[in-house]
Amino acid sequence: TIQRIHRSWNNLTQMLSKQKKMKKGDIAHLPSGVLLQQMEGGIPFRYHNVKKPASVVVIEKHDDMCRVLFQGGSWIVEDKYLYPLTED
Image (tube, rainbow, N blue to C red; front, side, top):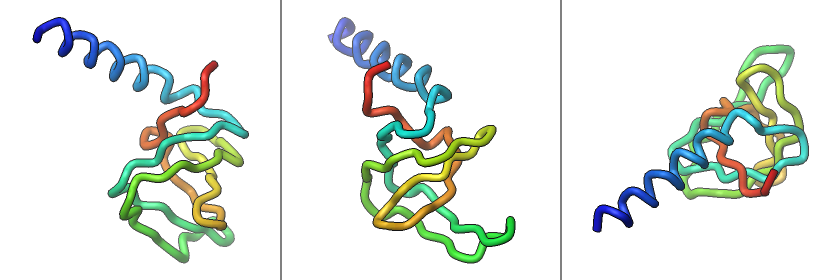
């Protein structure tokens, strides 16, 4: 129904509005299809395309990029791809 679609849209927009509030220690949802990278001396040296959605921990945030803990490693990802799983 229209009401259900409206509620779903509101939930989506609320989730997207929280997107920029990621901070160190947050747990986030990382969708499939996102490209992660590892850096050394400011130069990317390893890439990983996320195959399945995952939960990650934000370990550092700088501007529009976040360093996250994913599968035991530290990876860089644009914060626009992270969705908070914790309440404010």
